[in-house]
Image (cartoon, rainbow, N blue to C red):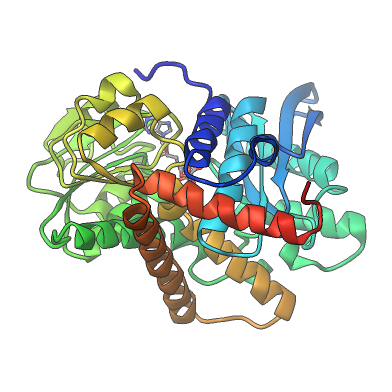
Length: 418
Ligand code: NAD
């Protein structure tokens, strides 16, 4: 089990590490380590039995130097102020890493959504939407899905916002259903960029994706699409997991069938084609070519990092490796494509959705996928150049160096330069 690591402190350590390689004053770096504002609110919502329940919720707007705040909304019992602050900061450096004109934000509600009916979840979501309506807008702050939220919640938030504001503004939120103004390719985008990033990393190491073995931790939107797309590229998915545990078959199995099993039973565990049941820690330490953490933060701490055997890690999850774990993996020459590039497909296609909403002109899926591919491949090359040219310790540090430079450039242009 991973040690308790505060994700906000991890974010700040990552910024400090990159700052060592940048000619930027400490005062400016300090500014980049804290959110501009955090809303903390208590939602009082009527349950189906007529009782009232109170839910703590947050929206953090970390930095808007490069454009409107942008970032998902998470429903999970472990949501906390520090987690939301960290996730909103990672969004700043993610949008800057992929070079899209947006800032970073994040939101969350402390809730286990499995314990509530759909009508309760709708009332909870609409109550949250009412709270954040003054803060959001297509030029202010544009939320999106994250863990345990999806098109359904995005549609509810859009509808609540538009009703309260008496407007039509589909670009206020992304990750919507296509019929509510969503983009083709958005559902698959996070897994798609994770796979493109992994393929580029394999290429960099002169390794083949075809025939490579892959383990994926977490089988929600990010994890399962990653498994499906890497399987389509000819790799062998040998292990996947969710919060109930993992499954393993050295010969590989069909990730689509495994997903069907999860849809029917609630978990991948018990899927008949996978021979063995394994724990999440066992999955993470399997001898595979590619490991994809696609669950929550801090999955790989210092202790577990010593047992990692994968050659490449493509981070579908945000913050899955603690800074101490990162140091160990760096020493052991594991090539890690950092979250702020690998999983940036979600926010990149959210950006495309926002662009399409504003133009009221919609692209087909092929165009979305091609534009996404260009951005991830080009920015991977930019990180590799920074990594090699400046002899940086890792692609993660390279990503923060490139991203911080871009944020600082915008800040400087705004005339706030001290
Ligand atoms: P999701 O809710 O669709 O799926 C989460 C999955 O993780 C589920 O299968 C769940 O069972 C599993 N899980 C939870 N706790 C676990 C544990 N301790 N061990 C193993 N599995 C566990 O969420 P998602 O949207 O796929 O998000 C997963 C990660 O990807 C998060 O870190 C999220 O921030 C990141 N991410 C998602 C998107 C997106 O577009 N959905 C974009 C960028 C980053």
